Length: 214
Image (cartoon, rainbow, N blue to C red; front, top):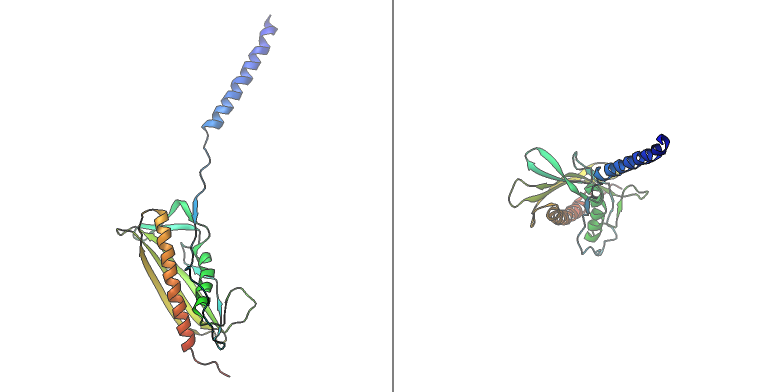
């Protein structure tokens, strides 16, 4: 009689253990939802203009990013000197990486260069454009909040390695709706305005540069 009750007891113990494991799996941490990702885009109208045959070839270096802006995280500021990042919203790629082809497209559309090539490339160029993304952040210190984009550009003679001209572009665009998406819309407007100014700056500087020595 004793042996006849041992088997059911073991079965009950196994069943209780299985229920306990299932409960632990149910009550454990659930995977978090993936972040929403956003992109930076250039101006809609980037059709190339007529290019002069004597125009120089421009090599565009990959833009550098200042500390704090080299990742895909969307930065915001709500206290002076304190950089924070949205938890559930990101850029699809680091901003400097997204801006690189947009710079090329804007300079091509300007018509001031025979060709515009993004480095690294085996192509040789007369001039080189170096850029640095100094900041791209959602500034919550004002009402309405604003997105601030600062880009520094250097145009160099590729033969002499001398700086022909440099300029710092600083755009502040008001956010029409608060939150990450509103900041993304304002950031795109800031990028487009900066690219227009950059193309004009590079074109004028290239035209005014001293004639190459023969």
